[in-house]
Image (cartoon, rainbow, N blue to C red; front, top):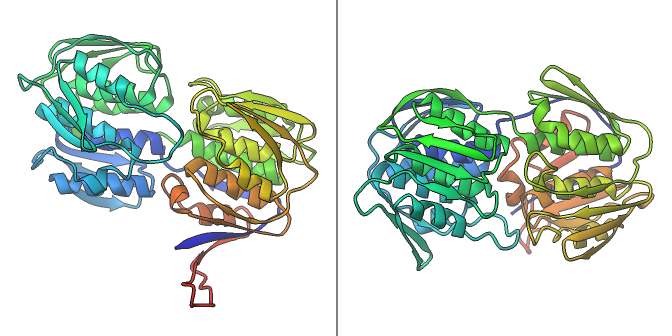
Length: 432
C-alpha cells in the first residue's frame, strides 16, 4: 500500500507538459484489435488503465512492442480468442469497448461486466440497444456480457441514443466500422475523445463522418489496415493542473494542449479571477488575487466536464462567497465531500447539488481517494491547505494521471509517495 504525503501552502511556478488523453487511449487501444497489420500509436499515456488494456490485448494474442516511452507498435492480425478473463476485464470501465471491437471484427465477444470508478448507475443498456440494432444477440449473466452476430457479421442500422452516452457512442461506432452497410447514430455524444477514436479508425481505413456532432455516420468497410496515429492531449489532465494553479496561486505554463477543448474550463476559472492566456498549444495560467465564487453545472461536451467537478470543488472551497455545483451527468459524484470536510471545507450536498461556502483557509489532514477524479481533487486540496495532508488509496489516481508526483514537484509542489508499513513496522520508506 502507498499514499501521497503533501506539504501544502506553496504557490506553483514553471511548466508542465500534458500527456495523451486517457479517455481517448482506452478507446483507441481496443480499436486496434480491429486492424489487420501493425499500428504505431504515439502519445500513449503511462497510466494503469492503459497497462491493463495492453495486458488484456496481449493475452488475446496481440503483439505489442514498445518503441519509446509514449509510442507502441501494436499488431492484432493474429488474435487467438475473443474471451476476456474475468479478473482482468472487471478492473477497468473501458473494457466494454472490447465488446464492440471484437464483435465487429470476429462476430462474437465474451467480456466481463466493466469495473472502474463507482459514480452511480452506469448501466450498459444503451450499448446493448445499439449492438442489438446492428444485429447482435446480447446477453448479460454470470458477470459477463455475451455478444454474438448470428450470421457472423453485423449490419448497418439507424440508432437513436436516449442519452448522449460517450461509452455507447464509441462502442457502437467500433462495432459498425466493419459492419455491412450504413449506420447512423443520432444524439451521439460529442466529446473530443470520440472524435479522436473516429480519426484513428479513419486513418486505418474506416469511413466515419460527423464525429463531434450529434449525428455520426459509419459506412462499413471490409477491413482496416495498419498505420500511424498520435493520441490527442488530455483535456482533464490539463484542467486538473489549471485547477492546481487556481487553488494554490502562482503562474504555470501548461503545454501540449488543444485550447479549444479547454474553453469550458477556462471560462469558469476566469469567472473566479484566474487569468488564462493562450499561446499556441500552451495555456499560461496565473492567480495572484483572491478567488471569487461562481456557479457551475456539469454537462456533456462542450459543457463543463463532469470529470472536472471534484477538482473545481477543491478550488471553490477557498473562494469568497457561496458557490453552487450541480452535477448533471452522474448520480454519485460527491463522495469526496466528507474528505474535504476533514480539511475544514464547508460543503453541503443535497441530491445533485453541492453548496460550497468558501473558507479562509484549509488545514492539512488525512484523506482517502474514492475514485479517480476525487483523488485528484484531494491532491489539489492538500496542495492548497496549510500543513501536511495525506491521500491514501492512490491506485484510483494512477488510473488516469501519468507521473503526477514528478509533474507537480516540477512546478514547485512538495509531494511524495511513501510506502504504508505493516502494522508491526514503524518506519516509513520514501519512494517518491
